[in-house]
Structures are given as structure tokens and as C-alpha cells.
Length: 144
Length: 412
Image (cartoon, rainbow over all chains, first blue to last red; front, side, top):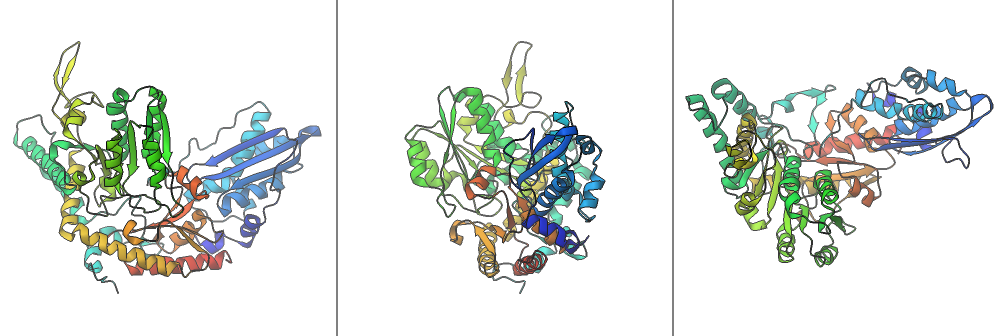
């Protein structure tokens, strides 16, 4: 793993200039989650249009470059898609979207926070419940 | 270079097997000592020796192994008590500081705190000195308030004294902040709290490993610390309390070892401190802690402190030269332990820690189990480098080089 490889231009660009950053005045879905290890925060708002399409999507958040860039890129990817698309998205898609950086196990959570927020919100809107495939947070929370 | 004026670092490092390993092909630069410290060979040997030669349960059987185990366990208690200037009857072995604050919450708090009472902590506490009091306040219908901080990360004594006017039942304060490094004048705080009628609880988890500590001269009711932060093993720590207090308190856990007599309708309790050590105790790790204390005593806690002060001063001045470096905590090294919490430009601490890890440098990044303090600082996270006796100027230099590398990657 090389950190120069993880922090490519792409991730740094989205970290410093996040696209779709902000809040919507009218929205149908509002979903927020944090990563207890880092304290990363992501909140997404979605307005659902005709044909169950993601008409508008924005996010706000605080945290590391990986979590914030990933959330921002995901909003771009999701815009205009049908809600069912969100069900199909998996972690491999997120890694690919980020340019397949070689993330260690403790940083994978950062990359996937945006996806978790998006899925939780959309599943809830569709009357379903999203559960992370890996179960409870596998990353240990360090002490003092 | 490695010989600071105080300690022979090369000689000390040779005692710690883990410091010989490489991380990502680089020398391990371990700067996460506020989180947990590395262990010298003598600590591992003491644990292995116990299991190889003496293993048996304590305070029960009468055969040779049991007597050896009991003697070794009680010997570790004497050493640990003496290390902080307490008597062995006043020292309860527990898993660590968190278990100690929870013991006080239940065994003291549930009987002594009444509806409408006030509990006081400070805004620089670790979660383990906040959450038990929140739970206690909730279960007893009490209120929990917090002492404010000055902008430099020291306690606002004016805020403390105005809370004392409300006659709190408990004052809980850390001896040394795990984020800011601030060393609080706990003797003064406890004296004022006591004259206001409050019981006092001091979190010594970040003090006992780094400073000479005399619990008697602090004058607190409860004092807690953890073995793994002072070169000892994980899973062992201690609560020191005045003997009368321990005697009048209810037990914490019920079970074997903590009883005198058990009937079907009631039980009576063992003498202190055994009353608070229910079940099979952690003999091996208590002995490991005893070995760590022997090691620290041989070096001398005064020297450990002096060494860390020099490293702190070097780190603040050297890292302070890096553009974008911003540190938190008092600048007076006389009031601060060897802890440097900082942020670097707009590089998030987790991103920085990933880049430093690649250089073999281990620092902590995140909220340090002190989220209220993070909010007070106006940040979501900080990076933190913290020292112990095996660190030296070369570790600070490695950290500085790592910051510059991160600056290059992030185009700071």
C-alpha cells in the first residue's frame, strides 16, 4: 500500500471541492450516520421524482478525505438513477469509483460510510431495512 | 543523539522486544503511549514464569502452588500500592480505570447519591470519567455539570468554585488529560471539593505512568489507574480508596472470594479490599504489573518525567516550525505531560495517520474517547503523539519528516 496511491488527485479534489455539498429545501429522504472509529459524519438528502428516480441529492459531512470524497462521488453517481439502483450498489462499486485505492481494513469503513447512509435512507423510504453485509462494525474502537 | 541528558534510550529500547520489529519495512516509531504502552521483556517473562511454575487460584487451596500464587499476587498488590503511596488494604485490583469508575458509580454512587444531588466532572474528561456519572445521574435522578476550561486547555477554577457553591456530592476529575496533556492541580481541587462536602474521584490513568504520584498528598477519596499504560499488561488496573470508605460501601460484583459467609437468605462480606474482588482474580497480570513497576522504579519516575518534559519541549518547538501545524494544550511544560495533540493544515487526522503508518509511525487519530472535549476544541478529531521512556528525539524527527511527506501528498 502506498499512501500516494490512496490519495490520488481524484480523492483530494473531491475532498477539497465536494460536489453536491449542501442541503435540499424539499426532500423525501434524509439519512445520517457516523463512523464511531473516526467520528466521520455523512448526511444525505434525496428528492424522489417520477418513476422512483433520484431527482436531486445532496450531502453534508465532516471527516477524512476518503469518507468525504466517497460520499460526494456517490451522490454524483446516484443522481438520476432509480431507487432500485441503490439496492444493487455494492462495496466493489465504491472501490472502483474511488479508483481502487489499496485501503487497509481500518479505512474501508471510511470509504463505505456514504454508501451505508445512501442505502439506509433509500431502504427506509422503500419500507425495507438495510443491514450491513459484514454485520456489526468490525473495526475496533481504540482506547485512550 | 539518542542519549537525552536524562536516560540511556538505546539501552532501554533493547528491553522492549517489539521495538526491534519493522512496520512496512521501517523502524517502528511508537508514539501512541497514552493509548497503551509497549511491554519490556521482564513483564512478559514474569507472566510466563507465573504460568510455567506457580499457576493456581489464590486465597483458597493450601498446597504449595496456591501459597506461591497468593504470595505473588499479594506481593504485586504491595508493590502497586507503594508505587502510588497507598497501603495495600486500600488497593483493589480491577481490569482498569474504566472498571474502577464503574465500581464507584455502583458501590458508592447508588447508595450515596440521592434525587436532586449534583455531580461534577470537567470538560476535559475521558468518556470513562463521564459516562458512568451520566448513568448514575440518570438512575438516581441527580444532575451532572461540568467545569469549564480556559482557552489554553487548563481548568477554569472560577467555574469550579461556582459549581462548589451548589454543594456537589461528587467531584470527578482527571489528574492528567489524555488529549491536552494538562496536569491538573488535583490536590488543590480535592481540598476545595472536600471542604464543600464532596467525595472526590481522580482518574490517574495518564498520570501514574508518567509522573511520581502520591495518592496520600492528593487527598482524594478514589484514585484509579490502568496497568497497560505503564508498561504492564492489559486487563489489570487498580482503584485506591480510603479504607473507611471501602468498608462502608456496598460490594460491586457478588460471587466467590468477596464473601465472608453465605446463607440462603443473606451474606456477609470479606475484608477490604477482597470484598471488591469477586471471582477468580487476574493473578498473572497483577504479577506482570508488579514487574512493570519494578522496571519503572529502577529507572526512577522522576527521571521518566524529566525525560518526557524534554521530549515535549523539543516536539513543540520542532513540530511548531512546520507550516500548518496547530497544537492544543498548555505551552508550559511544567503543567503538561508528554502528549501533543495537533492538527495539520486541512489533512484529516485519519488520513495523516494512514500516511504516517506507511513510515512505521504509530500515532492516535480521532476523538481519543473525549468527544465533549473535541466539541469544546471545535474539531471532530485530532492527531496525537504521546511519549514514554523509550521515545527520543529521533522519534520526533521521524514524525516531523512524516508530516512533511503528508504535506507533499496533500499539497499543503
